[in-house]
Length: 449
Image (tube, rainbow, N blue to C red):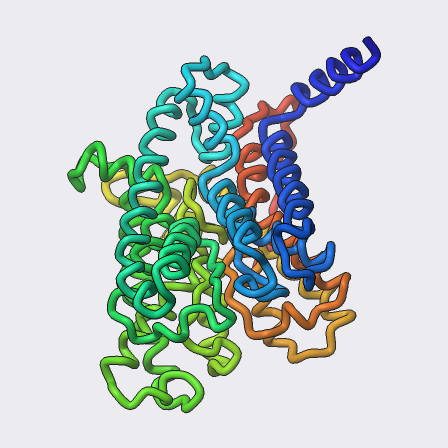
């Protein structure tokens, strides 16, 4: 009887939590569960301590990809399978996954689950959530399977059938979920000029990074004029960022003997530039030594990591739509316009204020983390900033500082990865909640600039 009473009391407390708090709690539970599983002797070869296991679990659930151990050698096949499941759960969303399982079993999905699902998918209504979840899983599993088949043509000849097929599946799931985990310590550097790898892997993480609302729009409407404003902004600005970062990376690194300069063929340099220009959009794979990039290239990469990819996607960052509204808001200010106009639609001041709030909170998290970690880390400051930006954007690219961090530094990075994944969802909930002002004050004036 006492156990039943405790369970009932715990259930009441859980149900009283807001959807974002409940969602964050679920992510935390999965992180802790993953950490415990990775600490078992069946999951590792004996070289992974408790903190390292928890760090790896956090990185997998938040689909970041930063590591402090070697995934391919320090974890057994079981441990790698645990990581694959954690990446899938973290990328597609725990609540999304749970609701899909319930719906598949014919269990009715109640209002509470729909509210949580709405927060997980960053939606404003609960009307078509189940259809969106079905589309989400169909696209995700289809892309991962197709990617694994194509990557097998490259990995099987090099590693044999068993190891090659597993590597193909692992990297396909990691790519679509924008996790960046690789079974090899040099990531994908061995395949830096492989046409299949340079085509399949970027297509997977770009598709996953577009967001499931965009994919659902493209799947159901299939005409530019019919898709939503969100999808139009995502597709347009994603293309614009790629077209800007690809040639910029090539120009900055063309003569660097440690990166592009090591490849005599101009086509190989262009190919590598393509991969490295799109991977900072929270993918985390690399085909060159990231720590050898020029400072200007590192700054550009950090900018791309902080921008991230799309809302309702497997990616992190402040999101492309947030960056787009910030940019359009700045242009509107200089044009003395009170509204933003794009694709025949308008965005008011309220949308800009939400974007500013999200951006300011994100930058504060990054700055505080940099400050705290810098108090105990003696390495190059640029590399430290790079790691924090990578953690918040849930990217996984590293300049080598993360494995060198002490206990405090690793805990800070884990917190930043968690906030980078769950934080925007939680903040979005509060921004979407309107409260009417009970007291109004006379207007004031503040001088700016």
